[in-house]
Amino acid sequence: MSVIEVRSLNKLYRARVKEEGLGASFRALIKPVYKEVHAVKNISFTVDKGEILAFIGPNGAGKSTTIKMLTGILHPTSGEISVLGFDPVKQRKQLSYHIGTVFGQKSQLWFHLPPVDSFALLGAIYDIDKKTLKKREEELIECFELGDLIKTPVRKLSLGQRIRCEVAASLLHSPDILFLDEPTIGLDVVVKQKIRELILRMNRDQGTTIFLTSHDTGDVEQLCRRAIVIDHGEIILDQPVKKLKYDYLNRKIIAVRFNLEQHLDVPKGVVVEKSGKMGARLSVDTRVCSIDEAMRWIISQGGVADITVEDPPMEEIISTIFTGKNTAE
Image (cartoon, rainbow, N blue to C red; front, top):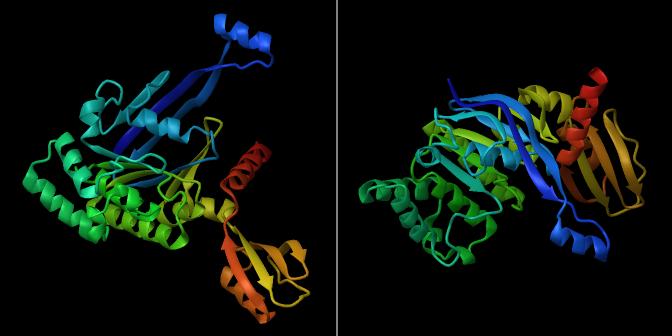
């Protein structure tokens, strides 16, 4: 059963053109010049109930614009959207009772108030009776391990603590769909993993459908079974994450620093991208050499001072997908 249906969706903006020179600036005051920006170009897709979908792409690809249209914040230029049977443009208020949103860069919690006060205000906004609200708060406090955080002013919370409270706040009214826009942005590795575990538990226990945008390939690999890749407003790929991972997420970057100068004779599947007397940056094809094997080989060299493992930037992955798609065509 599809809970989100998008057909031939388009969004055009009028952007003001800034010309160089003082004269051009004065002319722009009288007769400004505009250009059309096609942020979303004729996209179509569906999302099933209980699915965790990754909607990924580089900056400016159209991810946030799409989420804003799905939630009724922006009106599409053309096309059709149905979210839980509602039209987000015509029935935004009714839809808001059935969806939750978390924007990593924008808080729905009041900055100078503790989250518990924000929860009370949000409960009033969503017409939740006091008994139900109290029960729901207790469940979310336990689930997200908020403890004393719930009574601490938001301004005093760390980013990771705030995001946990943000996700909890978005679930107060038991939404059927949760839209997460970059929920792990700026978080350290440990906190990211905690947020991912909480999202998975929420999906498993409550059957919440999750629409996720992220630049972090770890979010995609660990949370989602399906991914849609968007670039320059167009969908360039829609396939299971398992296949995406095999085809495009098979490379890891290992940065290693040694205490002593080393000469590296790398195993098959490992390429030295950059090398110095006391360190190296290695590219590992995990289809040929697993990370465990690569790490054991590095440690066997001796004198290791530090090791970090990273994913390639999302922009690089998108470029690889786009290049491969064009080559195939």
